[in-house]
Amino acid sequence: MSNVVKPGRAAALKSALESAFIAVLASGACLWFLISETQMPGEAHPGKVTMFGLGLFAGLCAHFAYMGIALKRAGRHVFLWLIALLCLMPFASVVLGILLFNQAQEMEQQAAENGASAV
Image (tube, rainbow, N blue to C red):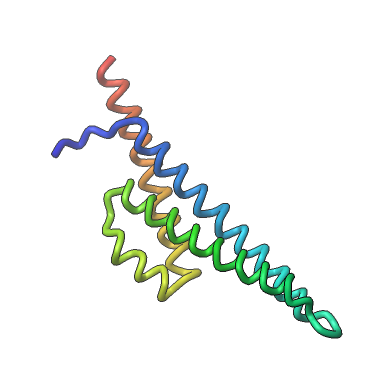
């Protein structure tokens, strides 16, 4: 296996990380609306609560899926990291995002160095 990094791999990894970040933002917004809907005086509207709950669930599922895609593109063990994400949700997600973003930057730098040395 060679150490040559293809230029498109870093972009694909960053794209998956960005999608995972957007998914967690969407689920955070649903959580915010869910909490504010249930804190109002009187009864909460069941339809709104159901939709915000489903939005929260869908956003978290999308976040896990995109993090799994990013892990696969980075060449890491997907199953072990996803178990860690489920058990330590906010902390493992932040740590993994930082590690994968740093790996993507290193991949870009290595691709740029390989491209400069080839010229």
